Length: 517
Image 1 (cartoon, rainbow, N blue to C red):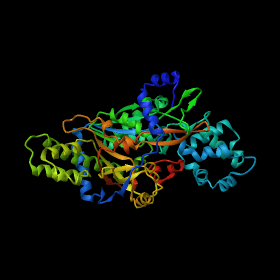
Image 2: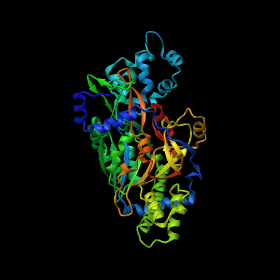
Image 3: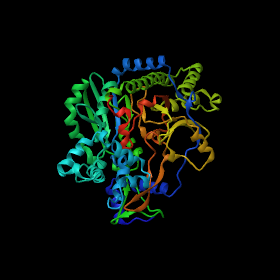
Image 4: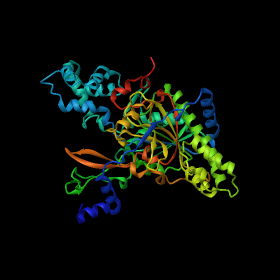
């Protein structure tokens, strides 16, 4: 693949070195490297289910020890709300009011999402604001035929001239309709953080956002700051970062040539795996990770907050033990008994596959082997029972050297044409809600370089579309998939009620997003 002098200058101006781009091209022209599923992680085999007594113990442990830790909540929030309104965009592109009614369009296209939108629109948190704007612009609005009113409502909702909600950052979209005000997902994350991540009345949060949305986030926080601080008796330290353009990857055509627009190479964001750069810059003892759209109304938060403290408490407990063992491994007089104790801890509590040859090693090899496995960041991940939600899940993976490891796996990492792999997928019992607490320091208090714990082979090539032209683009190992593949991993079952994402607009009508009547 040849590059012009102009191409090379563009690569250099972007801050990329030519070797990294060549490496991207190598991956783009090869087949995806699929993971090899060995078995689903299930209760008792990779997933822990705590008793009520155990849950209470770890929640109490967290509350007692968090004051000695620095805690930050990390929220990926760069996505726009366009996917929420996908059925409405399709409707605007294809519906002609002069040729058919909306009911006939819904029946012809079998658009359940559109049907749900129109029959429930008055309950949506942004309805009244859009409705008032319509009446202001069309004084005779209420006299118009029903289909015309519905069409205008969708146009106002999505038009760049009016509300443009599809291009809003999802975190700033109206989410919850309280009696006194309408809140956003951003606001709910602040309230939530105040209940489990605050130390001494102060909660620290970090949002990864798109740089074009920064002013919107800053202005929104300014508008709610006094109200949220007063309501929660908490002050907030909020920081933002953008997906580093240096993590963008080059796009190529389907016949493996540079994809160009107006004579320039096209570089694209490389998926949420690029946020590892942002996560690695966070300096804290504990980092809670949760997606921007997974929130609930404040009167329903108690159980969700309780399970956050359970996950945090369990991480602190096993991390304390891991730190103690790591310290022992650095001592010159460690006993055989202690070596075996540490190996059992890694196997039983950290899901680390200990080599079958371990017992044959000389002691100094055993020590180095255990050091290489205990000196890693730790993550405790909540897992919910699988109810058919799209996305990844917890699995045991078998590596080329025969070792097993516990991983969060997305469907695009799996060879779904394989009968044996599909059988494992179908037997999975749990789903990944992205409910993670991370410990990223070693026992000396030194922060790990998270880039050292990525499985680079888990990148994948995706087919995308740009102005009607298909292209191939490279996505980096996902943040909680390949991006954390070499971490020590623990899965804990949490209730499905703690997982309330808003993927489609009518998800806002589910109970966790509605006021109790």
